[in-house]
Amino acid sequence: MTMATYRGSPSAFSTPASTTLFRRLTWEGTVPLEIRVDSKELPANSDRGLETYYIQAPRVSYLPLIVPELKRFLMDVVFDEAAARIMKEEEWWFESEEGSLLKWHWPIGLIYDNHTVSASIRASSSLAQTPTPLRLILHLASPPTEKLLLAPSAEACKQAFMGQMKEADFLRWGNTKRMTGLRKAEQDGLWEGIKEHNFDEYWRVASKITPTTTPLRSQSPPPSAAMHTRPPSADPQGATPDRDGAYNVRSVPVRIYLPDGPVLQDLVPPLLDNGSALTLQQFLSQHLPRLFPPSASEPPFRDLAYALIQGVVTPPEAEMAWLGACMSGADGWVNVCIGVLRDNAHR
Image (cartoon, rainbow, N blue to C red; front, side, top):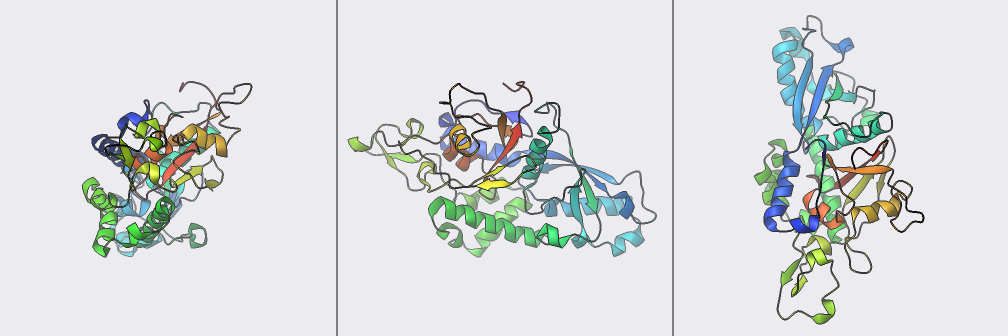
């Protein structure tokens, strides 16, 4: 699921089985990486014809978690024994081919999507039809810790990941009781699921803190006054609110990533004042009206950008609550990367 276009209404995919399907599709998504050791830092006697490593990396993983596999390749194929003995992987760090420092605490999928939309303001075409590897430069020493803001290690990455999950938990429910209520073994299980890329191990715990997509449960007789207080997609006749439902959270954890720009974050209620579900189009029109003009604008304008979530060009009618339950990252956040349209080929 590197670059796709999602079609269809999320409202039709709110059964437990379909929720699990979309979560698994998100989990199994991968991106191609091409990692090349900086030629100026290659130890003497290295095999300079093999210093590039290719990997199809899980979107939900992190750069520190692919370092052990990368190290094994370099030790076995590129470096000689003398260099291997003095190599310190805790000093390794990455930057893009363009020279941008990569953030260790970002999921790999987010790094890839952010690079994709940043390229959209420079490329002649808006969307690449064929996924291309993200080219990374591996440096073997002198990490710029003052710019990384985080030690380049798996343990530091784990702490950052847990912090993101707690922040997402607070935004959803107004407290972090669900996260702090987990036993230490359960919290560790979340990270182990990421490390081992084990969907079942991760969701065995994550299901306790992530909202469901069936926010209403049947109850008879239904209160007539409440018949039209929920979105039609989540309000079958005779239903009452589920406190763990996606449409009952206080706010959906969402961040907007602009091409080569700032990261935007705001409260994102799942419902509008009239009780209908907040859609991606409405959300983006509120925050980026010049790129996503409101549908009621006169004269009607076409969108000048597109939203990329988990490598998927997401339709404007997608409901934010559904995205938060089905297409958030493993850290609980819906990362919306904004690309600039230069043609209408995707329409």
